[in-house]
Image (cartoon, rainbow over the protein chains, first blue to last red):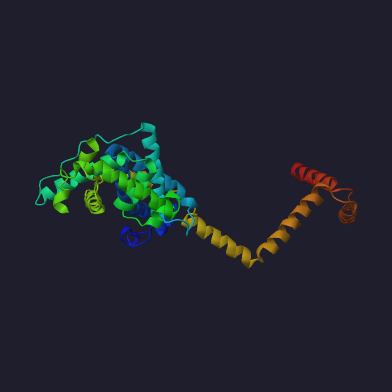
Length: 193
Length: 126
């Protein structure tokens, strides 16, 4: 199928075409889903190389699942978020990761460089604080507040109840609020208040 | 006491500011890495099990031909008749032998073929 025509199709339809050997569907799905997976992995792990490994692994699992994919089962993105979350948690447990020591990357010069620098510093501080949370709390916080998913979606991905998600997020937010308190001024939060 | 000097925790609004900043600070995918992923996806494409066009055409032609001659019931009848012919040829029942003997004035088909060959050799010698 032509690449342009494939752009308008739903993920599940593209996956069905992938299973039939449609190269255009493979291209469109990769371009659409890889950035989502990579962003999620990076936000959970705080490391670009590891996020790339997870992205590669998650997509490979999706390709292998494609021939047996049942139309009407979980959304492709929901399935991918779940696989990516689990792979990230495995990685964190194996490396016994504590706080992120990664040096924040400086954005290039530009007209809104100041804002981007501030965003970058805030994002880095948040990632460091997130990395100290228990795995499930971190997973819930990333999916809800960074990936922008709804509570029911997060519950589906984590295979727990909505109430359990709310509980995880409540505890996670409290921990973040305490952990980031000393940096409040440095992160310019008093000016925003 | 230390606790009195510990900073106040962030409020929900502060946290929302941080979440929004982290969302805007989304990591960009390296184009080379994306190209590798594209190649990996292409390599993972299942091999198509659909028959080639010329094979489909041949299959369709044979199906139509078979249908023209009565379809599968006719094919099954022909197969049965063929099998019966082989059985009769290899191990003929007495009734068949009687008929062939009466018709060719011989005891068996092998004897008949022996006469035929002999006659042929005689003809070649003369």
